[in-house]
Structure formats: structure tokens, C-alpha cells
Amino acid sequence: MSLSNLALALQSLYECNGGIGTLTKAISLHHEALALCPTPHPDRSRSLNNLALALQSLYKCNNSVGTLTEAISLYHEALGLSPAPHPDCSRLLNNLANALQSLHECNGGIGTLTKAISLYREALGLCPAPHPNCSLLLNNLANALQSLHECTGGIGTLTEVISLHRDALELRPAPHPDRSVSLNNLANVLQSQFKQSGGVDVLNELISLRRELLVIWTPGHIYRQYAVQQLAVLLEKQHDATGDDQDWGEIDDLKAELAALSRL
Figure 1 (cartoon, rainbow, N blue to C red):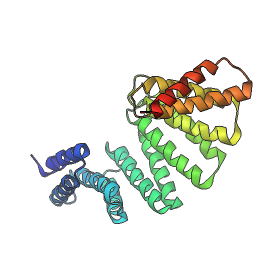
Figure 2 (figure 1 turned 60 degrees about the horizontal axis):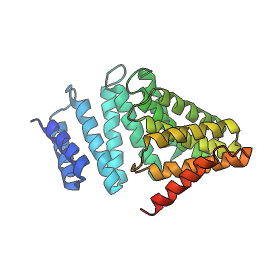
Figure 3 (figure 1 turned 90 degrees about the horizontal axis):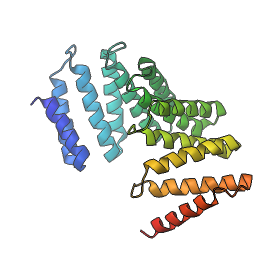
Figure 4 (figure 1 turned 90 degrees about the vertical axis):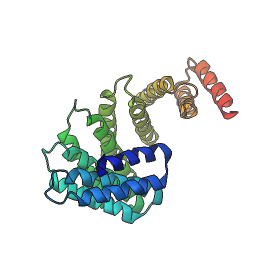
């Protein structure tokens, strides 16, 4: 087995057992593999990406900005070796954007976040629908723009976030494994919009999204209680706004389930 393959296998093992020693061994092997791929070796870009991904995993453990900035530097070099239309370009753009977004979360730099947004847009331009990575990139771009909205405000940004999440949801029809992610993301941003401006149409859409999530997150699911609570609150808001009692039975059922879940 090559150094790179062994390192990737150890990374997979780390993702299963969370052993930091396993991850640091993988990183050491990635460094060795990279040393064997000097420029212009055809595998250097991929080796750089593999090491950067492992360092990002390490950053999640140690919160060391130095670890993250090293990963960012590696992604930059990899991108320089794999510009568009290289088949790895969109993946590298997305990975670099993810790392920059993590850096923004660490230091709050708006410039870092706007650079991440620019990279997500570039990656998305290389993967239009129905590309299999399109929904992921739509979701990532929407999340980055949501962060920008939280920093700067601006209804236009929020409107684009909603549009992107709608597009991602459309590309994840049931039973797509990530449909619940898109449903929840869209519901969360619509909830922000509803808090700002209200609107019966927004509330009705929110209820529809939360109801579908409740179907997906069946009893026993880790997020079931959250879904039940959110839907109950929304139905009560609808009742307060309309005075219509038709959903009161559903509200009672949801509250009863919440009470049962809280006793677990």
C-alpha cells in the first residue's frame, strides 16, 4: 500500500474512532507522501489536498490557527497546480472556501468570509445542475452568505440565501439522504425572515417544511424533539394569527409527544 493510501486509510479510521494519534500518524504519512511528489509531479496537487484535509480535521481537535493556515496554504498551492478546467479544481475551490470559512469563524474577518464566498461561487460555476456536487456547493454558498448576513445585515443577502437553499432542496428530492439537511436549512433561514417581516405565506411554508422534517426524523431520531418543538411553535403562531382551531388537535399531539420526550 502506498504512503498516501495508508494515510487515507488511517484518516478513515480516525473518523470512526476519533483517536487523535491515528490522525497525527496519517498527517505524518501525508507529509512523507508529499515529499515524494515535488513539482511538477502529477500527484502533487492531490497529495497537497489530502494533507490539507487531514490538517483541517486536526484543527477541529486543537483549534490551532496555525494548523488551519497551513491547510489554507496547501490548498492555494494545489489550486495553482490544478486550475480550471482541471477536474479537481471545483473540489479544491470548495475545500479552500471551507477552510477560509473556518478561519472567519475563528477571527471574524469579513474579508476572509467574502473570499470564501467568491470561491464557492467559482466552484458552483464549474458544477452547474445537474452536476452531483451542485447541491452541496449551493448549500455551502448559502451558509457562507448566511454568515455574511449575520455580520452585516442586508435583506438582499438573505433573499439570495433563501433562493440558494430552495435550489439545493430541489436537487435533493426524497429519498435523497441530504434532503433533511436542505429542508432544515431552508426552514431556519425562512424563520429568520419571518422574525424580521412576518407574512402568512412564509409561515405556511415554514409549517410545510417542518412537517416534512417530522416525517423524515421519525421517533427515536436525534433531532426528533427539535422538530416536534419547532412545528408546535409554528402552529401556535398560525393559530394566533388566524384564530383557526383546525390544527389545535395536532398542537395537542405535538405537546404530548414533547412531554413524553422530555421525560426520557
